[in-house]
Image 1 (cartoon, rainbow, N blue to C red):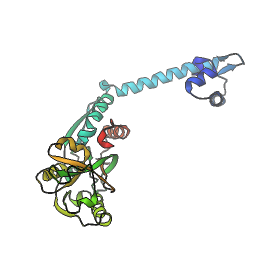
Image 2 (image 1 turned 90 degrees about the vertical axis):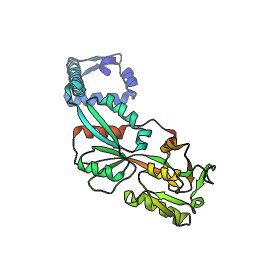
Image 3 (image 1 turned 120 degrees about the vertical axis):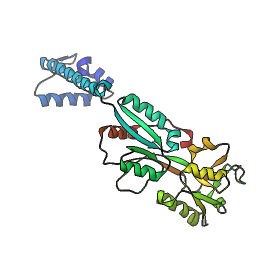
Image 4 (image 1 turned 180 degrees about the vertical axis):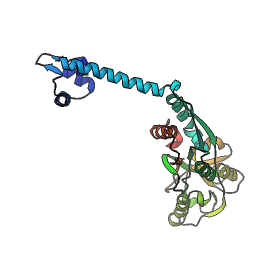
Length: 293
């Protein structure tokens, strides 16, 4: 920047730093090279012959690096790689289409094939067997052979039949549900979340929850609610799919507020295109949806 501007004040302004750090960096570089790169006086700054040579070499090196990066990114020089990704319905509703759109733009040589899999045990098995490279799931299945990364937490809602006596309430508290029959996921799918539900009911709300049925995935639990078999908890993103069949209500004064959205993969799968996808997901910021708030 200084070589282009030939002014410490202008170069510092464009770099958004003060002149003192810029001067120190230049002096440190000159000391390391053992050569003065600039002639300095009170009126002007000019390149020395050594500075002109160094500038030309630096430009050539940057051009070479850029060319190498462009060559590696070019689809012409890439063999198309494929990834198989499993997902649960909320991932599709919340962020997956936008994520895949941006990923395809940045990595056109990686083809991502997707499959909806709403059973956590199936996701686990297919990851371990290599049928899936990565999956988006609400449930962190205990297995030392899989890795998980939390993407975000989605708001949890209580789901009631449309004709339920509490259906017209804006928000609900857990004690108001003490006489309800609950439809939950099997405990083995997420012991921590299952035990948290029992703890919140028994130790904080003062009642032992009546768990009348277990079902998986959450689509099945909501269908059971539609048919009057009980109430359940579901991620807020599911509301638009069932808005005319059940009601979704916020629940207050409880730790039962979030459904985690995780990505899971088998670390024994060390393919570079999978690692590229994982790194991309970690840096991806989805469009903020109202039901994430």
